[in-house]
Image (cartoon, rainbow, N blue to C red; front, top):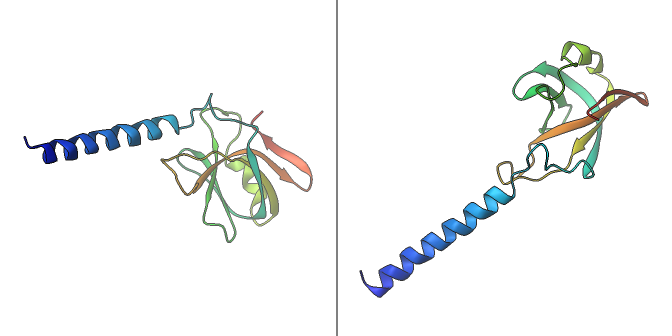
Length: 123
């Protein structure tokens, strides 16, 4: 193997190790996710449905997917949240970034408020 080929292979291996390390360190786990970081979204609820990873809420004019993980919160169903459809609702969502979702297109809901009343809270 020539010196030039060896440097190229070594460079590729080093780049793969660095990228792999960044991916693994940036994946938020359920126990690792910080509930101190959150964002508030206020908009009209367009649709509430069951799906993966749980209850899915779509807001009007917002391409993001907001969800409640029903594996952790068994007591709530999509039918319970149908009252939100067509109403101005405030969602508090986890503001966690992951390399698996670099544009944060899916955000987990921490709480839902309708007319200043809490409808759902993860805590």
